[in-house]
Image 1 (cartoon, chains in turn orange, brown):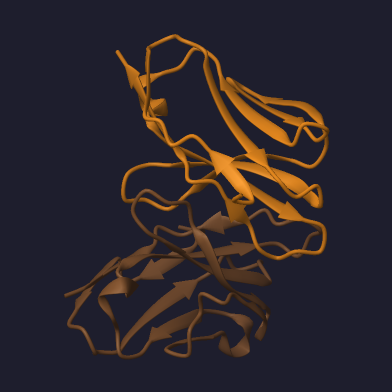
Image 2 (cartoon, chains in turn purple, yellow; image 1 turned 180 degrees about the vertical axis):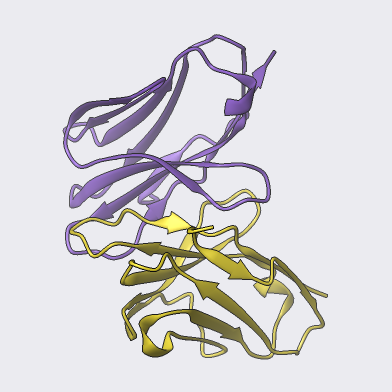
Length: 111
Length: 114
């Protein structure tokens, strides 16, 4: 079993829809959770990070972590065509310097 | 531009040649990372520097790979005797010296070995 599992999609939604992106992880030692957005042929861009169970909101984006289920989510409200990108979850453990990434989910928001 | 800068953006090389990539991190960031990303995959960790000290290396970093960060500023990643399997996007990231890894990535160097 991979340390981080993420459905690669592709996921296609109409503009204005609520998008739900998810990752599961296997190692309970992971403590820090991040979401990155990556446009085609560009480097990943940090969207949000959190280190506790619960929700964290930033504008149209909400990150949710459930440590008991080892499940993390990113919700995008009122999705826009400019949100079309690959979304990567990334996780690290206490005292670790490296991020473990999921494969990424490719999202297309159709006008 | 105060972000992470990588050069070159693209590199095409013949199999067996050596290549070197450069990364200039965000100026106040002590930590610097190299990752490799192949098509359809997430980035995979290669190595980590705290200032000029290389503190961690992935098993992905074979003997043909070497990274340096002289004086704790910019970093270089060299691949010797390139192979077709080295074709990938090489990403550099930097982060502040905090308890968690909040890394900011550069645009990457796309390597194609022919």
